[in-house]
Amino acid sequence: MRLRRTALIAVSSLVLAATAACAPVDDEDGGDASGAADSGAPASAGSDECATDSLPVLSKGKLTVATDSPAYEPWFVDNDPTNGKGYESAVTYAVAEQLGFSKDQVEWVTVPFNTSYAPGAKKFDFDVNQISITPEREKVVDFSDGYYSAAQAVITLEDSDVAKVASVADLADYRLGAQTGTTSLTAIRDVVKPRSAPLVFEDTNAAKQALLNDQVDAILADLPTAFYISSVEIPDSTIVGQFQVQGADQEKFGLLFEKGSDLVPCVDGALAALTEDGTIADLQQQWLSDVVDVPALP
Image (cartoon, rainbow, N blue to C red):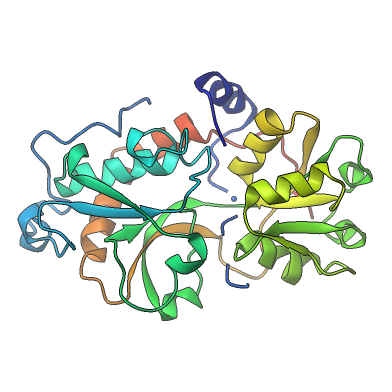
């Protein structure tokens, strides 16, 4: 996905703090947060454990961060995590700065989404890729505190009958699809429970193409991604509505670590500081915007 600045502004006008939202499950510039840290402030002031030189990172003097390729908007821009643009890139550099790393001390590596939460040793300090914190994943990896709360959204073509549905239950009669390994796919199976098996796609691009090819009646994605799809990528599409997975705590995206990583408390400290000073809220407003007129599906 490519999200031009103008498109971002347009999307921003449509939505209001996307604190509510999908993320890949098991199967299953403003604020220049991208800017380098000049001197580096420890995540936890006064905490020796979180002093930059004491951090348990893979490579001394570097923070190694993973994400998938392509890296989709609005989470990243131009498929380039290093530019500091897009919500997750900006949050990463803000966290890095809190930990005391300059921008050029952040090294990005590519890790496919579906392998990011697999058990075992990791080649990164943390992974950022709209990874929802789930009890199943927490058995084999660790997560930071959530840096974004997500809602599921239903995207369809404007002339589709799906555009007229008024409840989650109404979706059960339609052909639905989502990216493999995502909470969107889980939401289809566990919440919508369609009469026909959902179609599973390798990535969001394949899901979008299936919608255009009439292979599915609607696709599910997290709300910010849905806004980008409907406003920029498929202009003839519309967001039918949004919903949270019933019976579960609000879905949150977290930074993912190797199980047992001692880096987690320091990153949590950095996130807490960024929340406290308003940086996280500002970055959400800048890159994701707030939800205004997307109806909640009962």
